[in-house]
Amino acid sequence: MSRRTTSAPSADEIVIEVLNDLRSVLLGIACQIIVTTGENEQAEAFLGISLEDFSLGSMPGDVEIQISNIDLSRFWISRHIERACAFALQTGTAVERTAFDEADWNDLEVFLEGAPRTSFGGELTALGHEDSALRRTLEMARARVGLINGSALTIRQLSLLAGIGETAVRTSLSADGIKTEGKPARVSAELAEPWLLRRRGFVRTLQLEDETEDASPLIVELRTLLAERQMEVEDLIAKAEVDGTWLAGLLSGDSVACDVEYLCRTASALGIDPAAFAGRAVETLLRAR
Image (cartoon, rainbow, N blue to C red):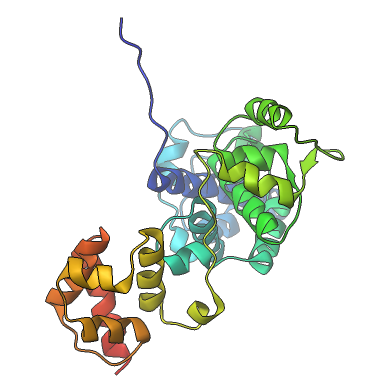
């Protein structure tokens, strides 16, 4: 007999689920607008969709389809949450993986604490579910911020970052002789970080050096890829078969030719999509002129 297994969702799938969860929260806000003002029109203007099939006492059967029509580009919070996802899941370019900090979290915390937990018909929004993709991912972003700032992490935060259950976290901590403190139980950053680095599911939080922070996104991306692949510039020059002076200039931020062939070779040598990288690079180089 074969055992059926389900693979873990990809980062892209998680982000899609997070944004769908956000739509459920926005629907809950629309419900509160109706309760507060007594006017459906204001709630519909807020969401940008019709609420004809909704009532305070019930949800339509096709609610998921209906709220999928909510255009998230109308809401600043959606862009903020997308940035938090890239940071939490450590996906995208180096700039996207690092473009989140304590101040950003403070803005999100206001949203998380103040947005409604219930919606039409008393149904829970994603914020009312502890294991919703929205809550898990945003709490993961908070945990990363805490780890960077040297704050102690809770068992749940360790669980989210390590990609294992809370019971497994407690068992592992006990086996390693790591004691928790306080309520809820926390582990100091000094002990949490090395413990996380030993977990297969943990992705280290990318942090850029000061000199890199002032560089263009293109240079940051190249330097980060080189570091992640443990390659020297000379190795990349040889593998990509490009002119060494050209690549050195590109990495230094000098004005170099928009050589699409060289850019595609460089991307291939680094194991990333050549067309996408070349497109980003050409735009950056042309704007710098």
